[in-house]
Amino acid sequence: MVPQHLSVLPFFAFSLLLFLYSAETSNYPTRCPNFNCGKFGDIRFPFTQAKDPTCGLLMVNCSDQKIQLKKGGRWFKADNISEADTISINDSELQNHLDKQICDFVEEFQLSSPDIVSFRIIPNITLFKCNRTSITHASNFSHYKDCNNNSFYLAYPTGSNSRFLSHNCSTILLPGVQNQTHYDIKLKFQVRVSVSFNCSSCHFEKGGQCQINNNGAFLCANASIASKCETDGHSKNHCSNAEKGGQRWGWRGTLALVLGGLAAIMVISLTIILIWCRYERKRSSSKLISANNSYDSSINPEMEGQNIYFGVPIFSYTELEEATNNFDSQKELGDGGSGAVYYGKLQDGREVAVKCLYEHNYKRVKQFLNEIEILTRLRHRNLVSLYGSTSHRSRELLLVYEYIPNGTVANHLHGDRAKSGSLTWPIRMRIAAETASALAYLHVSDIIHRDVKTENILLDNNFCVKVADFGLSRLFPIDATHISTAPQGTPGYVDPEYYYSYQLTEKSDVYSFGVVLVELISSLPAVDITRHRDDVNLANLAINKIQRCAFDELIDPCLGYKSDEEVKRMTTSIAELAFLCLQQDKEMRPSMCEVVEQLKRIEYGEFVEGA
Image (cartoon, rainbow, N blue to C red; front, side, top):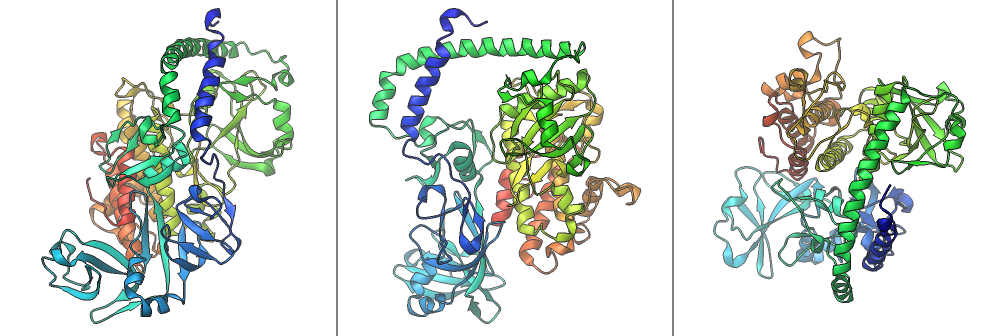
């Protein structure tokens, strides 16, 4: 047990931290939920309303069905905001604006920094805004308009390159189409919105606001949670301190100085307590696992209903039996190698997914405890949440998760839901980005998933990703380069190097994610014994096609590969990124942080092969 003279410190430390935290965050919103926006339906960040300006980046007027693409900018009339954050604009008033104030019209489309949010206008005309005093070459460009000290140039469809203009030129995308002889501004167009990885992390994980500081660098202002690491534009991890969270000083700074000495003592004391508790927890876990071999079936599970283990509630078997209607087969959501999952509804009204692990032996109990321990230490918007579990001594090993209603990515790609065609290319692109973000977070948290596959990527009703199934996951010691372990995972996704080296690294997840990327662009399953024997594994099939540049034989034509040049560019780039992830030599594969950055570049049209 904890030494008696330290027993009051947890309460004291918690009270002090709560006071400091509440003082620091009292002016900031603590929760930015989805909101109903009339015709647009339920929408979320990066969109927000005037009453919650700090909850998003793009202001929406739900009653007038209008949206601002930049703060203080023009309100555009919109028809729809899709689940993939694509805005359909149809604004007849733009023509009057174009006729009367062409300079203002052009400036409206000089949008935000890609460090926060980027926009892809479809269809578009590329316009270059240049300072008239610094133009060096303007050949192969058509002069469009002079506005104040700036000249605007249109690039000819062929033969033009922005490097022939001054470095002081910036790019603006106007809605429209262009051919060899003329251009045509469109009043009906789409805007694809992509929030940067840093900004998403700032908003969802740190409770902050995305800003650009005076030096033009990204700033997560007013963050209530300091980050462990952030990823910069060069795919290098760097640790940030509390000032990068945008803390405001003044009386708070004075308070911090006055309490500095006391806080130092508190930190030292808490460190001692945490080390002690970790030791006790490890010893308790060992006892629990050992005790399972002498499991006493006479234990009453109803006595465990109010207990907490590893920070999560303990449910009784009877309670979950009632929630699932006695584990009715009609409520079964799925059946994997480790157990079946059932839909249930708790007495408090919460909808849940109840996972029932097969076999009640030492190995299953260890896997059961491992999944609980890992999920209780993680907080990420794209990771499934654990609500609780039964005791390891219960008649069954049950894990209780939040219910994710829209099935798995695998089911939408080549299962019962595939016929609906709901996974359009923008949604698939977002699935790739959100899954990569979740895996990068796991790796920064020293955790390897070990079973990355489309069946473990769940989708909510807005097609947002929730990565699930951490039963095989492993904590990765900070001072280790790999973990030696017997191969586990799912055929078709397992790192081939892992089969013969038994060495588990973060790059094993990268390989599995490469298979997921190929599934997203091809709509094919990871393993199919009806294919030619050399192509049974999708990874082998993809490598062969990509090496021969036979992208049209790999990419699903239903995505618009042959009819949409932008889809063709992006899907081809995703195939090339997957090729890097599927390299036999793990040292040749990118890290998940690098994958996240490459996905951003693909979205912005800046993919660099082998980067």
